[in-house]
Length: 181
Length: 200
Image (tube, rainbow over all chains, first blue to last red; front, side, top):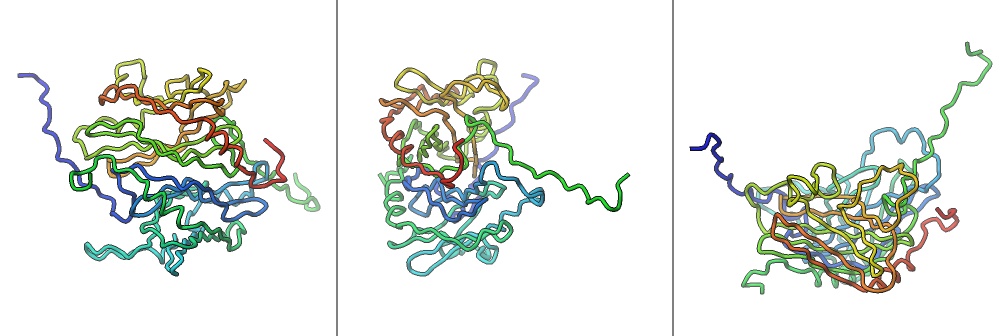
């Protein structure tokens, strides 16, 4: 018998992220062929970039760009608080979702929150990564932001939701089940 | 000693450090987007996809989608994502097979891969394009990793190849090609955020 005994394999871990917080892991998303400039001041810009769509929602980078060569204010050394950059996504039917804590769902058993729901998985000086659970209806899809700490006034950009819906329809299932093949 | 009549010394304004162009996409450009959606490799348990080429006048970014079909006990090193572009695994050493390889190939024979010599940010002179650099990665549920890659240098007209290989997980060298003209056209659609900004 060997001195080293291999341990038994631990059982697989069930996915831990709520279904409303990420895109389906078994898919390659469709690409929305647009990058949006949502806000611009003399020193900062906010972009929606890297829009990728799934049948259950879409994700994107909320990208903060600083104008190159401009002096930074020393208060920037303070810890970045991502929620300072408020983002809201509005559907054509009037529903909205945002990254402000008041938009966050209150867990209640296995009950899923009503879409749309916006989940910002990362926040930092360069922005963050955002997942929006729920596809929009046809019509205008509005991205609004405001960043008081950096004097970015309320600003918005509008996208044709049809581009998101078309991209979601192109998302590819990696391992189709017999039922879906 | 400071005289009471002298104004207090104020700190110098802090000018933002600009990283080399070959390290990340330009901060002051809105990219043109190519709706490319590729499955580069797929085995019964693992897959590598590529999507969303964002083109700039000096290069392009894209996203790799690294996927496991299900949680696999004992799976090594988080799908190899941490191995990519890192210093932790010697691609020619003991763990060579675990090194997930990825690269791009241009029609003129030039290429950039994650096996290329890792450079310091302050390296002078700058490397010759194309170069390939990891700019963002995020994983969840032990099943999925998203890896954003920056390729500095635009391809010439002709086929643009995306190539991957992961020997330890039975993914052979696999390539997918697109028309580089799609990337060049998207790069020409990129626009400056601040049009009055001096070009970099």
